Image (cartoon, rainbow, N blue to C red):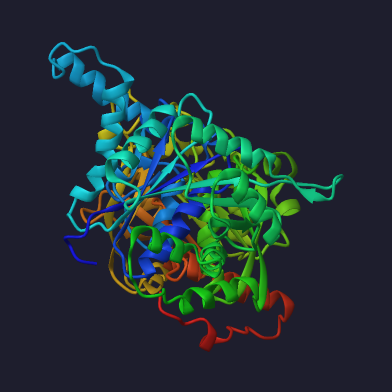
Length: 559
């Protein structure tokens, strides 16, 4: 598109219930328009008063997605990055807390010249400014897809809905498309889908002053043409703009479904764009590998938030990406670290093809994680540790290989004799919890002859971090003498970034979060190689007489 073309907007709202998949819908539309040659930006507008999700309980909010610039953001930004293969910044996630923090700070400085500060115009203008700021970053954005969190009718989201209503008036119908994601439930006792929830949701949206241009109807299976006609008639939306969004095998199938229903054509026509059709063959091939795997693996995730899978959303997706590379379906087995502490590791892990210990905070469940790591290390089961997972791996090694029976982390026991994990120097005296950890992208240098270097294929990498504690350098020499390899360190050699156990089929642990940079068509090297190792381990279990390294021609696509 020409740089002189005016930026257009798609605003995505939700109704009836939360968790309908607005983030996936927004990502899918943005992806389709990007594949048609447009420069697209996504933004999430979250109605909560927290400045960011960094201090929120994972059981309430799910995963905190960390960006290169250190911003702690909503998990939907992970979807945006994965679908668009972009690295986003702080400006792509706006919360009510940020808006009010900015406005109150300005009011205290006298910037409003004594005016009464109100929701309209001050709050709504600040929201509009945050949305439009994306167009001013480089002046080349063709389309902004903005997702409003929550559902229509929530008190918290009203200022955001008012702000996008105003943008619709200011920019005009040729520059704004309102997309409403709504539920069309199937009632088994009646044997039919019901449209009334959608009708009421659209009614509530219209009372605010927003008439949706497109309805994305979340449903268990595809809906009939007659049902789409009925929904369109009662909601004042053309039938062709009533798009079914049925449940799918994989979220990466959603943009293909939308394209098959001409959603990208509807959007292009609304904006008056004459743009090429998208090239989707690589994406279709990736989806086909997900739906038709040649192998099946069982990999355990041992943590303490296993009852809320969204706490590990990026890890789940990274396993999908790694599985595609190996033509394998990775069936995740959720193992509570507290159960392992009570019942032992063998009971829960003996039949797995691999184990991952993710990040986390707090002492609860740590002993179970340490016991799980001991079991996979001693039994040559592929292992990947992330953040706290690496710290637990170092504690386990110090206890069971180096003989430091009371080794632990300073985070949990401050009077321990052997604190092999200690507080980072720049974290001393920090009292505020929000936004004060080591956050964002940092470089690391990899050691020759290690699995880490082999996986990445380059000796210097950059990965995203979110932690306060690190390996205590006072114990590095002892750990190395007993065989632990520090395969990645910070360029100044002060911070251990990666460890691995030589001679083990795959035992790698990292201080950073590799899952945050994995992409569907470009799996993260560590997840790619971890899954590959799990495939080899599974093959050896089934056929001990053969190593069966396995189908290289199918597992060497570009990473």
